[in-house]
Image (cartoon, rainbow, N blue to C red):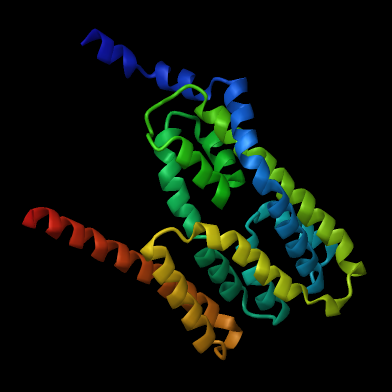
Length: 255
């Protein structure tokens, strides 16, 4: 009983998780380094696209520093360029970024003992690949030494690579000819990041439905077809996942 109480004392998880671990930080940096070039290149494309869409340098810098979400930025830019209502732009970006709610729910048990300001900062610099790499290393939410250092080794270089690429693209945007087809380059960048994340049947079904709806609804005003595609894709993934879980449970009961 004494050992159990000691292991779950309020101070132990905080010390174990939050204490700096140089080896864990370097391990996170090593694992995340191969993704940095792609992140920086994608940021470069988005930075150029922001300037080409009509944003001033100050507006583009504010967007990349505050939003820090390439898919949401690229989704919002055509709406901004077409002078769509603010609520449409905001809602589109919100729906595209709903995946971060899932990421937060997955990371929360690992760092629930940290102060909310620190958790807020970690949430701001979190990204798709960094969260996936962290959860691959630490699937168990139980407190472990070096967890926070490993996560920082993934997050901070990733954030820096994005901002360096994006800011370079913002300042280079005025010098890039329009005929380079940057809109298509941005689409290719998203595909390169998205394809490795399509793991399993639910994600694949969601992507296929979202793609089909986006093509069929391309004529909707204010590019609302994109919003509809994201919503139906998410619902499809959830439905397939729930159906697969019920099927596995029924198979287990039959055995």
